[in-house]
Length: 100
Image (cartoon, rainbow, N blue to C red):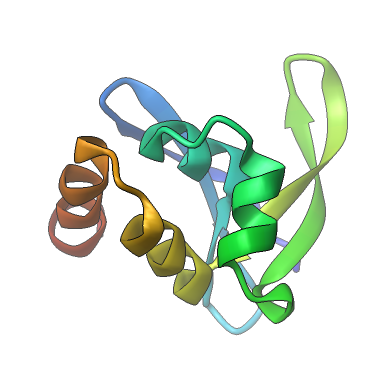
């Protein structure tokens, strides 16, 4: 996995993404959890995401380079589906219809 991060903005919240060597999109798990209203992103990832679609990636942050968890597209949809927050439906529409 080696490309630059591509930031998107949803309701003024950043969602960092990148495309892997095969061109598949990956999404910063913490950013997605923040948008969807999950209080504990680590718990949400453990409960709702498949391990195969979760990867750590060294990424620049305001505190320097940190290993952040990124999720593949399938896990993105799993988090959206499992969220009970009203933001989830709007985020789903944004992901499916507007962000590309």
